[in-house]
Image (tube, rainbow, N blue to C red):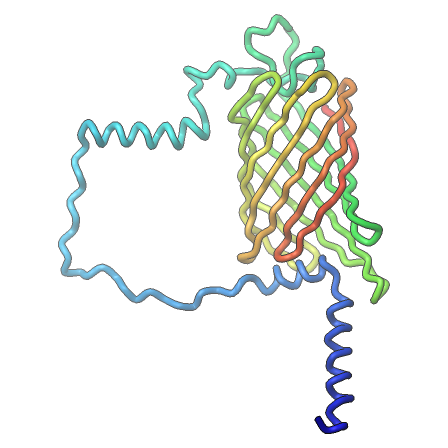
Length: 279
């Protein structure tokens, strides 16, 4: 190698290293979400021939009716449930968990307690800590018009300090979901969520989201909460998983847990702690 090429290669290496070390995980997530995933440009030119005669629809018979009933059971009844045969679907929403030292989010219809609440707002705020240079905040509001479903809004703000540039990188995620509790027992509820999310701070792209959440009321005043959501923004994953242990005191609670985010390629792991109130 000629001596003149050595300084050039060294300079190129330093520039590449500088770009690498000056980029935070948040910067990487934002850059990847802006670019999106590589799209398949190939096309399938095959199409059904116009000369082929249309296929006749099969006639409904006993077996066909059975298949249709099984499909209906595996879809509608597994997602929504049967209000005629599942008593837990009529459980009432409580004022707040453990208000009677026993019930969680729901109270069975045969309960002797007269006071029941049909409208409730749950507000939860968690501080997220990964290390001294990466932290964030997660605030959530659940709006229950009545016991049958609720709306959930999540706002996550992440901050990461870049020691190379001495500046902070920021990333905000906003989720809006329709949530339905498929199982509504006094000590346990499990449901699904469907909605949309939005990534701000220069990315400015949205995607659809879906997932599951559950609450387990072990014994007064302790409960466990867990949630998982999947989403795709510009063809890349924006996924969330969290688990919390809650200590309830009347309408308030404090919590300690773990939260994991996958935003494009980078993964983020946080210790979460905070609290909330039931209104």
